[in-house]
Length: 212
Image (cartoon, rainbow, N blue to C red; front, side, top):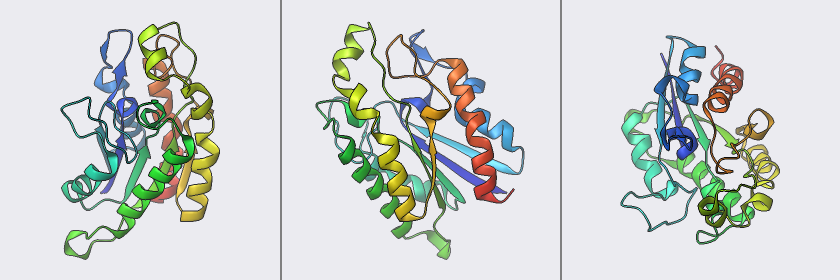
């Protein structure tokens, strides 16, 4: 049995702007990935709305700093064969930092944590698949337009920056923007069709990395 941890934000949690609410379990991309990979693989969805790569966000009762929470998730779900990291959209909020280069450094920090973690029973570190989020789009939604002010330009730079991190660190890489687009309802999240499409697009990449 292979185990895959999907570590992300609201795109992984399955935020549905149209509700607003949460996409049906079967529509969320980790669920679609599980269905595509079959019974020989366990896919664990670990998504949190607002999670950043490695930066504090004090506007929620949950700890949204991805770097601080990751060691606990690694220990909770060990042993892992692969971790899929899909983070960075929330880094584009101006009160976080709004800087794509900083988000890439955050991804680097997450890779370091995965590689250096003290896993129980001498288990090896899992492989890492870095997924750049789909670019933020302009929207008529006043709340989200203000929340992600400047994010349209910054998020468009994440894919090449993440690809460089993955290449240097020897990780897998996938550009989610090559397969899906965000909904114009808020310019950030995925509708049901696109979150399903993301799971379908990731499946062959994960198969190769797991040698299935």
